[in-house]
Every structure is written in structure tokens, then in C-alpha cells.
Amino acid sequence: MSTINLCEKVNVRYEADVVVVGGGVAGTAAAIAAARGGKKTLLIEKSGCLGGLATNGHVSPFDAHKDNDGNTFGGICKEIIDGMVELQNKCGCPNSAAKRVGPHLFKAVLLDLATEAGVRILFHADVIKTVAENDEIKNLIIHTKSGIEAVEAKMFVDATGDGDIFAEAGEEFIMGCEADSGSDLKNAGFDKMHFDINSSSKYGCEEVKDILAVQPCSVMFSMGNVDMSQNPIKYNNKNLKFEDLGIDREEFASLEYAGTVGFEDNGDLIPLPQGRILFFPTGRPNELIVNMSRVIGVDGTDAVALSEAAIIAHKQVIYLADFLKRYVPGFKDSYLVESSNVLGVRETRRLIGQKILKGIDAINCVHSDDEIACGSYIIDIHDPFGKSRALGGAIHGASYGIPYGCIAPKTIKNLWVCGRCISVDHIAHSSTRIQGTCVMTGQAAGAAAAVALETGTTAQTVDVQKVREALRNDGVLLRQ
Image (cartoon, rainbow, N blue to C red):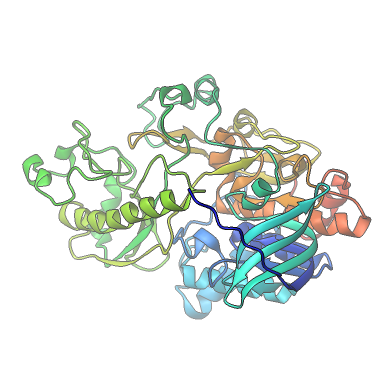
């Protein structure tokens, strides 16, 4: 591979107290929290709207915004839900569930919250270089429509989802599952499909060494005009055989997509990329969000791998829409409304921070006096190795705590991490990656950056109790 040396003077055009990179739900929450902490805050986002996979990725469910006893986690999570209810009453479907949101409404709610807090937003900007020295980030080099420019700040938050900032700054990270993930799942009794309690699955990272052991990628899409009176929900979230839907095997084998990626022969089961039919309401009448595409072994930090996976997943959308219309009751007269603009990546880099939240602690709902966020979602591991398994199950209580050390790196003094790339193991990650939890870790990261700047401390030395006080003052529920 040949190389090119780039020598170019770059002007510092943007200055801030706190810079947040990534305008998904975690990054937006981080920016709001930092701005509410009285700090001049810049939010850098590569697309043209806020929300990340919740908007560009068409991931409608906003889960884990409350505990399993029904108590809200408060804070920005609650503000998002309240904002959705208000906006749906104005221009949406007033009777729809607030957590089943349309991307067009969700992006508006996030934008209102961010601008009202005083966050400056820079859309269509990509970070291309992190400049760090003496264990501190000094600048970010970005590319925008205006060209190559520099950003200067005192504190930074990595909300990229892929850990782009902390990785280039030299922090330690892991991708995929740890060697003991399989045995940990088995010992906890979570080595079964959470959607079919009678099924079990051998699962261990030692099984496959030649592919990246991260959860697979997907493209979400929605189908309109579904006849719900035909009870399509009857077939939802189950592994189905051909006879369950009255499908003729020979007819299916003649379809143009039979045998393509995701539609390979699967024995007696209907060969589908997800291994099952999976959909849920969007909040609009007779419309369903479909989560059935799947591409495995994708390195979400590699441009070529992402592009190749996106091509496969976007083609799967058309094939799956055809399958639903042909064979699933209620879908005959339905139509494809829209699909995600981007590939939905579930798992890439995870920080190895000051603390690592273990899956067993999430399962057992462990709380601690240094927690800065709570999680409540199930353990939900989309099998890295195939389409026949989605392992996990409900946690053993109302919620678990996420310690401060999960958002703080070991070395870089002025950096915090939030969202799906925080410091957790492969098992815990399958729960902490959910939107509500990402909002909570984002709010914690932004609050911590503001407190550290106010008190002259670092990510490693900040008074965690002051961070927790700031979160509580902004309405966040912490168990300890």
C-alpha cells in the first residue's frame, strides 16, 4: 500500500469548553448536560440531524428509560419521552406509545432540547484526526464543507459509538467477546434463546476464530397498511418452520434471493437472515418496524467492510418485504414505507476503562455508590456466529448500576466516553447499548466533564459524588 504525506496548515475555527463528538442519543445527552453545567459546548455530528441510529438508523424503540418496576430513570430520558408525547399531540399520532417514535419527531425533540440548553451544533462534520500529547487531547482535526479545520477545547466526550476518539488517543479497548463469554452465559443460565425458552444453544467465542466475534449488523425498515386483524403478531419473534406458514419449499427455493446471504438453507426452519420474523408497532396505525436483516462478521471500524455489509443489508430489505407480502398473514396488501439510511452497527470497540461492568453484575442487578447511570434492558446478544440464536433473558431485578469508571478512560485526562462503546464486557454490552441507557451514560459524561472543568480536576480525579449530585439535580434517578 502506497502512502501520501499531507502537510497542511489548519486554522482553529471552533473553540469550546466541552466538545462532544457524535450526535446520537448519547452524544446529544452529553452535550445538553455539559451546556446545562454552564460550559460552552460544541456538538459535532457527521450527518444532518441528531439521534444517530434512532433517526438515521430507523431504530424506533426507545427502551430502558425506566426500571422494570415502572419507575422512570428521570433526567434527559424523561424529557425525551415527555417531549415525544407533546409533539405527537401536535403533529403525530396522539394515542401512540411515546417510546415507539418516528424518526422525524425524535430528531425534532432532540434538537429542541439541545438548542434550548445552548449547545452549538456542527452538522456534516467528520473528525479525521485526534491530536493528543501528555495524556491530554489538544485538538480535533475535522473535515466539513468548508474544508479541513481544527477544533480546540478543554474537555472532550467520545460519543462516536465506535470509540473513534479514544482509540486514536491510544486508550486500550476490546472488540468482540471475551474468551470466557460463553462460560459466563452458561453459568448464569443465559445460554438460551430469550425469545424461545425451550431452546438452548452452545455459545463460546472459541467456536469461531476466523471471523470478528461482534454482534451482527442490520438495516431496519417499516411496512405500512398491515392488516392487523389477521393477527400477524402470532408469528412474531419465533423460529418458524415452512409448514408454520404453509410455504412450499420448492417455490421458496425458486425465489431470486433463495441461497443469498441470510437466506441460506436452514434445515426445517424458514431461512431468514434474523432466523425469525421480528417486528413491532411504529406508533402509526397499521404500520410496523421490521428488524429482520442481518449481516455477521462485520468490522464496523473498517470502511470497506461497512460498505460491503450495507450493500447486503439494503438488498435484504427488498427481499424481506417480498417475503412478508408473500407468506405472512396481514402483509399481503402492505407496502414498504422507508428503510434506514445507514447500517445499524450493534458492536465495535469497547473502552477498557477504570472499571469494567461485567455481565453477571448487570444480570444480578448490582448497584454501587459510584454509579452514574442505571440500566434495565434484557441481556440481548444477537449471535455473532449465525442466524439461529439471540441469547439472553431478563435481568434479575428492577435495574443495575453503571459505575463512573465505565465512562472514564485510564490515561487521557480530559476525555469521557458514553453510549455503546463504554467500558463493559460483551454480555453487559448487549444491555447497555440500548437507547435509554445510552442517554443516561451520555448525560453522566457531559455532567462529569462540566464538573471536572469547574473544579480543575480530570477524568481520573474528579469527585464522583459531585458528578452524582449534578445528575440528581437534573432529575436523574440513582439507586445508591
